[in-house]
Length: 317
Image 1 (cartoon, helix red, strand yellow):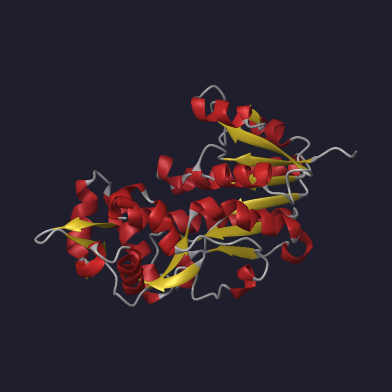
Image 2: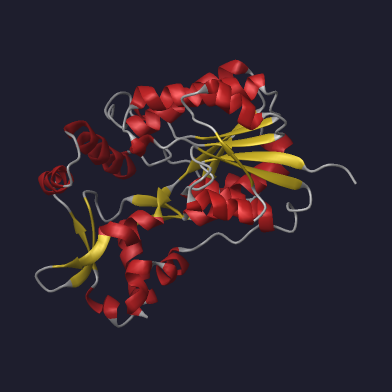
């Protein structure tokens, strides 16, 4: 019996990476052919130990230390690479971490480097939105990956449904009605993405490697307008949803709320422009989803399914 190919997953204890690990451990089409190596900065933490108990080879590496990355990738056929901009919001730092990952993949002779990326919004909007740093930084890394000439493809996650259920769709005064609040028009399209689906997308990218090398692969179940998000809530929770509504936050209110969380001014600007992006240009610049969906063979989580499983909505059944 031939040895299993290794997929090395960065951010293995996080949302995106953790979902990739889970899929490759359990999927009937993958588990017999692939061994999973999970990378974390601290292999002694409980989340890392739980991965090891499931059969993951857990290794420690730091995206700021290229030598540790090369060691972590050694012998890997495929690498799923993701960085966390929000851990320390610093565009230049994220770009350097991404370049380190790409350089390490080249040095380790990785046969398929999957980079979790986003669009260059400064370019897309011709400079009108130049402060969506966590998009642009990943796009700059994508450009660098392409310049290296390594075999790579690019996963583009959508808007986290967990953001909506976590803190954007809440009970609000004066009547305590469930209210979805964003500083965009109700007609704005939102690309709905459940992070638990990440492995389903990466599975498709791996099984269709030859067709998808060099291409971007969108991680989104469906586009839904902000109003359709509320309509979905009403359908999922008919009693509670009778008074549910969408509220378009004024820019000043949104900025005041963000500042109140302790976010520095540049992050407040960044988050506001991220919202305007969806309203005025489209999160993906209007790209359709059919090219992705024709390759994904697994069921993608719907907004209603996500709501039913969301902790903050648990009392609403």
